[in-house]
Length: 331
Image (cartoon, rainbow, N blue to C red; front, side, top):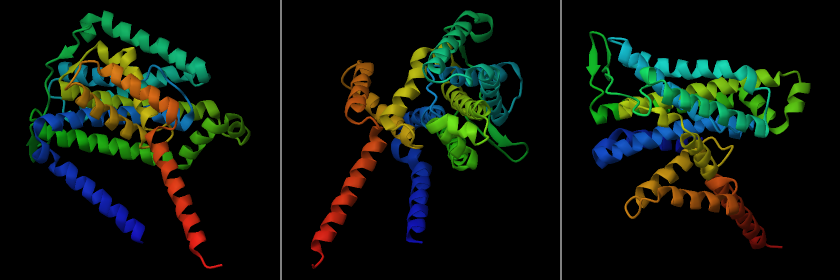
């Protein structure tokens, strides 16, 4: 009972802080938080593949970029398109791409899966770069209309105001985060962990491993598309850079720093990288160098990431407390 009260109190405090965040920190840090939230969701969707299913992808940015392009193209060409359907189009665009690729990619794993996605990711990047008539090439698609969020005849909220867009983005991304968490807690989520740990045993139990991977793959791609859609709306721009290999490595880095296999590990990793980038840019432009050094140190000394480090310290503290309690007992 006490534990539940503590959890509800913690969640209530978090919601309260998010509600007053723009008032407390101003527009600059509000925009910074939106960027963090976008890449946190992007990284969590990637972790559904790597941490929970054991599939390393070097091309996850293609879903992020396609989601952004889907929303941008829809808003550019469909007059009067409401905001939520525009985001939904981004989600569906990424999900359709995942559905097209999954019959091939779910039949491989390990290095083959990683390199195949590297190839597909680069293919999508070159298509976005070369098809200037559709994607705008390296200039991208920008200046598309941002529709207000509202209920016809009831309320209309201007999304061009940074504070209003912050609340919209946090709600959409928060719901996405909850849905991914719920997905991992379902019986199917336990099967995907089984695929990661011992795919052959899962197959012997009667579950279809390729089909299981396909479902996870489509879910991960769809939520990466949501992150890309919000990113395109936030920047009012989407370009081929959203599909490049560096964007694909971003969730890999965030997940490894935060903690592979932990649901909130990528969120922590995104926060660490966002904080380090903000601090580093005040002194030097070598942000990638600093992030690279952090990643090397994590791989060498904390291979399970910061979440794993926290668990290890907690276990050691519990062991010491138990030892002291035993030593303090009268013989």
